[in-house]
Image (cartoon, rainbow, N blue to C red; front, side):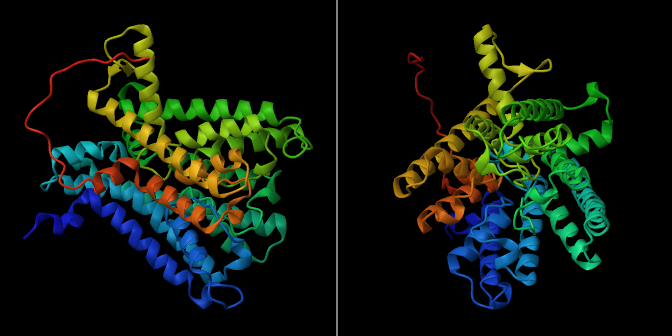
Length: 446
């Protein structure tokens, strides 16, 4: 029987299929009358877009979540982004387990960017870590938020518990969905709300391979793997630089930080240096940000967070590998690397492939949406990067986009979630190495 008939059994093809299946199931459930507040059937595109955004842990919405969706609908959305976030974290490890049973070396290399090269022997340990950290962090953050909502804002305990749980799971999975119509803008001055959400987002954006490494070696820098060193260093650098840039650019902006006191300015600048890199909650009006701040957000969203976690983007490691390659060329070095380690050629090609595919997809999507929509180009670009990087921040144009543009955003969210390399490899049928190589000749570059 034709081998291609069993292509779906190939682990590299299994991830997109499972995610697509979950999106379709979510669409059906959200289309039920019980999922909406008025008991009507949600439009198919609305249900599909919301399901895609939830499974891809993005957070972009076309309807007001607490107004349009009933408690059942909101619970469905919460389950979808819990499964979506947990699935992408565990899928990398499960692929590692399956790789030992006939998974080809070529396919292993193709998925190393998403899987972060987890050894098969580490898989079971990492899975246990994923379960333990998920339960512990979500429970702790949910309790802290629920108590704050109840004691500080006078919410009934049941309502406070619901909002605490929803935001805790959303933050941990970097989903960015909120059970409040204005996200967390109503808590701009409350570090007991913004703080736990920030910490949860930062933790999971590091990726579980980093957590595993730190659990083993604690803070002994010399024993950390190169991946952990790059991810932690890059994360700190991006958070600090993003915080300083946003604080400086928005300090006097009357639509954002301007009216706040110094403490609130610092808190909200820090919050918005974390959210563009993966999560999508907002305590400030994103539509009111200065253009130069939006540009900063473009960069933070595109880079994203750590590998094999809930973060999106091309990943911190990918960006720093490319940075090291450029630096080595400028300095005339033979090899590219960081922290006294050099990179393999396969990793360099993967980093370049991920970045080029991501940039190309965003460029094509932005160009198409701009051709069918009268909305400003910078807002459209922001939306496309946010969708691909599964961030969920928006300048407020999502609901105003035409149906075909929303479908384009769904594609961006799906590809951004399962990984450009994973999708490209899944669609490549019958790809095999050629038994020959062409003669080498170098064109002029630059």
